[in-house]
Length: 295
Image (tube, rainbow, N blue to C red; front, side):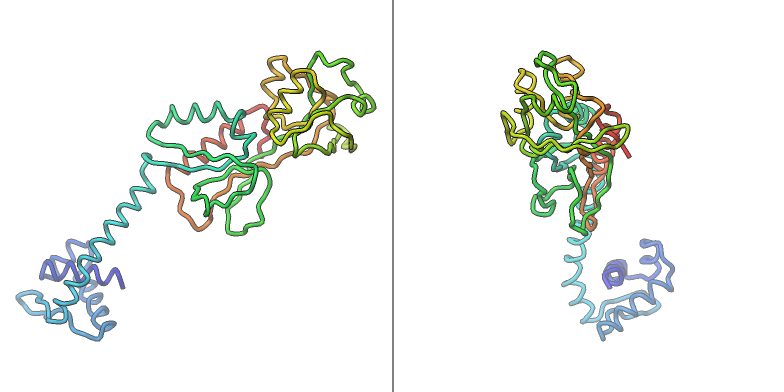
């Protein structure tokens, strides 16, 4: 009905079926039929037709006054929305896990903001499954899958948990038995150590009291680097310290559980070109990292 109403408004302003058809890129027959359909829906004649053109009836004139401004405002809103969705200039809000968004992704944020200076990032870090709707976020990078069926959840890869310690730790554990006797440091989400042998799939659980624990895994990294014990953490968090020699893998044939990483967005919400660009660039970056196992 809105389309028919717009046709009526153009016809009222041009006072001609031919001019209306030309302006809207329609046939004269289509314009005439759509106006007749609107009149039938409203139960009133809106336009008088004659060889001289179109004139508004009293009902049509009243209807035009009431609706023309509304349609113009609606067209402007649609135009504004189209600009919001299709312009590279503007904001994108993303939610991400604290210990992935800060540290492992530092290089990406720097790259993206230099590459696309017209885009303003709004990055919110949390280890909880925050609601995209409540947070008014465009995207979320998440560890694990949500049960919310209204979301599009695209698995982009996995991050492996690995055992590491300072190279100076003495004695440096070389066996499971030695590991069980070694001092240890744990992040709050990694207090129970369930490890798997990479080659044969054998599993082993190490349930022990850790010397130090923290709800921030970066503290566990720092303590391990300073010789306070072995820690089991996501490879993404310790990769650069291993490369720089600050940490060394313990029992490299064994690994902890894999963290499944998902890119998430609301299925009913149209993503702006900015959000799509951030999503695609971030996925590409992740899949290029040595510590990330893409799908």
